[in-house]
Image (cartoon, rainbow, N blue to C red; front, side, top):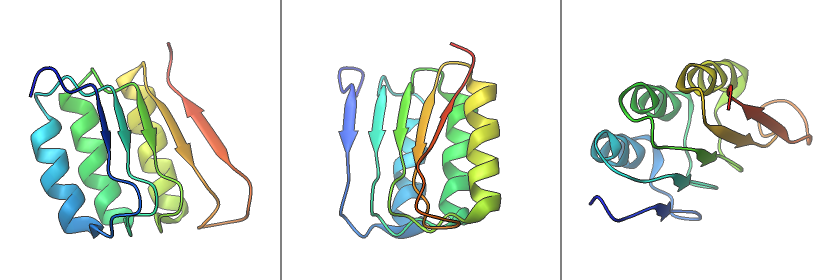
Length: 107
């Protein structure tokens, strides 16, 4: 859908399989904000999202609060955001502490 600008899936326990399906449809979409807070996503789901960043430069904001992505997942999505160049990623401390990480590519 080329007119959908925001996709909010928060509090839906879609897991990695669900985020894989969503990521595949986002490759050619106009979505600018993807909100997948508390969706039971792990590092596997982050890998799907990272691949989507490579294919879709429209995504500008990704909300990942309340998922289980690990430190390695945080690094992976951080690198994808930087490579994307114009994406903000919000991650909470499920993997390390209660601090909020804010990662922004080169806008």
